[in-house]
Length: 139
Image 1: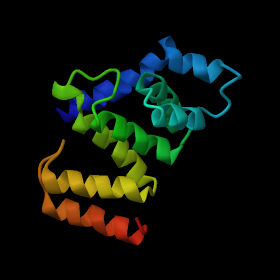
Image 2: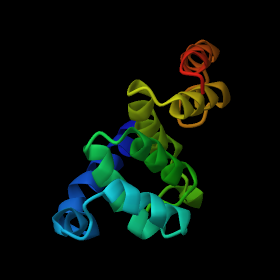
Image 3: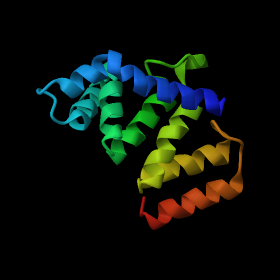
Image 4: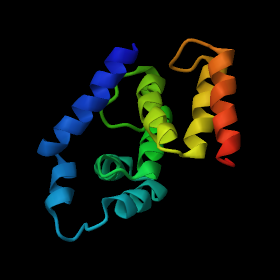
């Protein structure tokens, strides 16, 4: 299931070359896809937010990685076929990237996922490890 989710995330990023994500990258009116993506997310426009935030994540925008995880976790990803629309495995790919880049909230989400077994095998040791990292990051 994790490999399928990783493949979905990679496919989503690759499909950006054929979708609105590529248009926003080339569009001079969108100099900051992260900011525009965050605004679209706040307005509930997930179809617009996802490609913009994915583009921002490719540009090393740490918060964009976490927000993409939130989109997948909340069942709002445009490319998911998971039951109920939620894809915790794909969300964890995004959270893991953000957490490893220092995002404390993503670290908390990783700890929660390991504690509850969402998208990964339940593992209290890993949950404690991520929670410790989050504590050090003051999140």
